[in-house]
Image: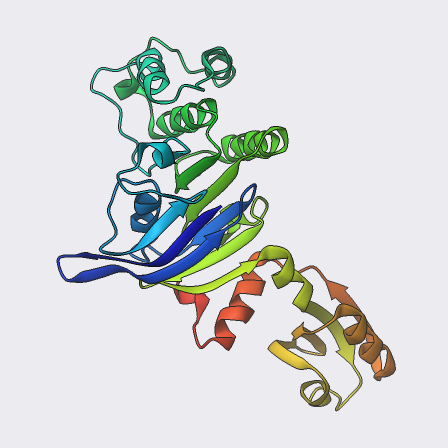
Length: 299
């Protein structure tokens, strides 16, 4: 478990992170969302022990992270621009990381390099951005640590490779205790992989919720009401979003699905149906309630 207690970080009078408190459960995929400058990368670096918080503390499995080799040995940080030694090859980085991570699986590393078409003796400086991202992910997976922190991991990967990496992460989580913290500015990248979502904005936490909890409490209804019935929906339902296109009405409604459908059944409508909500639609509804327009933040 990761515990972040009132953590702040300031760079040249700019407060990058402001008294953030979060708990990230083990064996979970935590999606950390926010625009550039929201504080995602700074928070991840502090979680990995790369940066020291100006205030507050971060614990991994009860161990303080800063200046603590035991805590750092539990996590692997994949930065947006991963560091590789000049003229190093993939084989060189294997030898480097195996010194610091005793559980590094060399056999699996070689197998994964071959599967992804990455030549182990080729200089990494000749790799494309996407290939470097792939190599960073493979190195992280083969350390066998229980916590992996990913900063814009899918940026620079083509759509096929994104799905391949997500599939490997999913398989890894099923096979062993693994917690992923994935930071991104793109909701759509996280929708099919995360259990929990946190939204950072201007250095603070705007929202942190289990994805299933978000999905259970919001429902999209499409219907064609009888003439003059449109205004009655607002009196009956807790509507977070209402759109009308001709006779067709689209509503996002907060509440229990069974109760919503029961009320729809009793109303005078030509037709109605419940539609699946995307993560984007859920966040738009949740953040608008809090007074923010997420469309200007991360979409």
